[in-house]
Length: 453
Image (cartoon, rainbow, N blue to C red; front, side, top):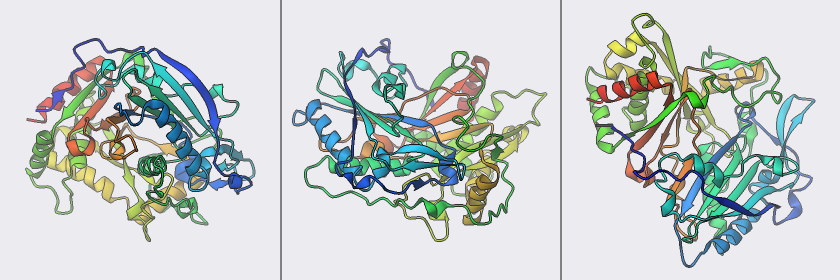
């Protein structure tokens, strides 16, 4: 139960020998985006000024060779940037009067790169296994542009006729759910005569802080900043260098997840607890991670895990499901390490479920107002970042669905990544990417299998 994901038997090709053919900026198909007012960014958006990178692999389709797909994608981007996503062609600016970041809708363009590789899609190996070579499939270092586009696209064609679409997008633009909607709209505009799949809701004032701010809850999951918003870098990187970390992928198949759900019933979960796949996997991973660095001398240590909660349906009134922007806050739960070791699994699942249930309308508004007053980042022992059910590989393009869609993985001790297997949400299994110092990894692996029995 719960297998250690094995890398491909052959050595993974890490140098994909990518050659850039063209690098340019593309612009909205209409000029009406100019002279628009700046886009307000909520306090959730404000702290997410860093790029998120994803790669979407497509198999060869004789009706859509890469050069045709490139033309279709360029045209689709020009169309979506004309009206519904005009801010994609904008630039991030600091409003010195308010001290807040804004998006200036100035039609300065998005980056678009066309590249080739000497390999076929099948030759680059297992797409699920995080290959450092995939970094070559996205634009690295935006300094090649005079100013920094908020999004850059790279289409890399393989010699088999397949291709990879690499996207680097500033997190202020989208959370995972709104990025999925963007992909659906982009795909729709790559067809000849399709309307937008979903009209995005671009009113980010819906998540503005109250005036005056009302911080009605303590927020131990948030850490105050000393620097004004707009002057800080991306969220603090854990002080453990990647070279000092081992990384492994642990695969949970549907039977493993069902087993965890049954295990959660032993000892009795609370009647209000939802025994979901996410809750049991999060509880299992939290337990293993917290105890991987525990001995008899520090069992009283407090462990706090953070995990994202979509607040769209939790607000009153609810946000539109198509809200475009970041509408996700960090839920948290914490416990002494001895509790995680000694209490039944059902209690750990209760704690995870309670952490999510805490995210009511008032709690979310309090967290947003806290950002207005203190300006800070989420803060915990580690974050579980779930790409498990976002469904990027369910999006239908003219040339078909992606064979696989994934984040470009970087290894950090303070982030544990949940991502799907090939087949996406329909596979119902999940892969857990963990990066830890070697001794902690050995213990994590032992605990991961122990608590699955």
